[in-house]
Figure 1 (tube, rainbow, N blue to C red):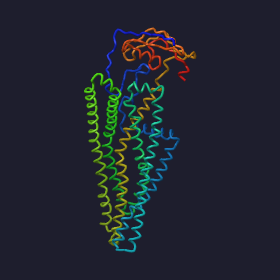
Figure 2 (tube, rainbow, N blue to C red):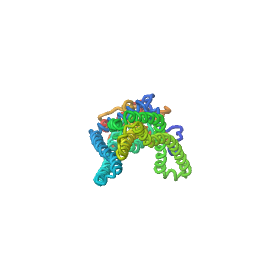
Figure 3 (cartoon, rainbow, N blue to C red):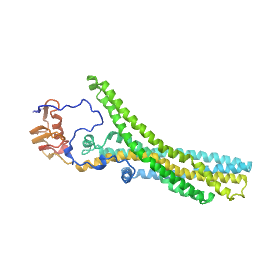
Figure 4 (cartoon, helix red, strand yellow):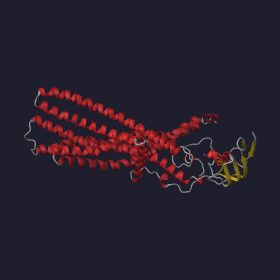
Length: 467
């Protein structure tokens, strides 16, 4: 083989730390891109608003399109199964009122058939719930597969991989791909069926409540829900913000742990164990601090949701007390009145439960907002890089690597590393680049690979390698 030796020397070398101290935002080819970065990638866009809705809509579109509409079919099947399950739950909820009536009337002949029906209905209700959990898990798995494959396609791509790894547009891309997508998929599979079915069930149980307790019943429940929704709305934004910050801190902490493994030999050579331990402890302290702040913010959100959940039973008794005290049920026997009270409690409580369930989803929606923001930010960064990256080298059909008057400079500082290099390599040639540490050997290779732009001069690479 022919060997061409290119010597590169500079008066001095920059001082580079042995190991990176945090997730990399390394010097890179800034001159590849315009100086203005997109606003959405610099700002922490994790608030509830139109931007979040657009990002969630994009996630939904990606899942629907990339899965060949299978996720849409799964959602429909899960929704139908959930609806059938609600029918079973309704009949299970009516059983206590029937027991009150039978026991109040001391009707032994009706007790045993009712007991047998109760066992069958409750067993079926349990089977429905287990099946729905299985269906939700399978939907979450399919959503994770679809989102991860799409993200890998956008992330591990010629124009975006190097830019995302070196530009610092987003923190911890690996965490967004491996962890955030998994959590988003699992949470969405739980929340989505409940939210889609909620309007239908609310209307149905509103009518039922109206028939038993009059207009005062549903109006009281609606007012109860509005107060709870407002309180949850006020308590949710701080949680969304803190979830986003915690995910970033967790990613930095994981990066430091992986770095210790990767550079274990270098750490041992320089006896850097104590320094690395202090760095890891400092990163852990940051994670714990952010996690504690999140727990306190979740406490206030949890306080609101739990109080409104448990207060529902009291509201149901107030609702039925009004028509009873006004004499609407004076003609009923003790057993019948107990049955009415039990049925009203079930209908009112289930209507409150449906509303409370929506309120309780606030915490999960906060997680969805945080995870969804981080995932779509990665996509947005890839979109922006696609629009900014341009070909920095020429292509030739001769199968050669050629430079003419090539000058290489550090992208950020502009410090010149190589000047007026003329080079021509054919297939089978070997290139030896020599020089002291930090003088620009790797920088020259980055330019030859098209990762950095030349400061001046031209670079021509084989067209076949590009294709």
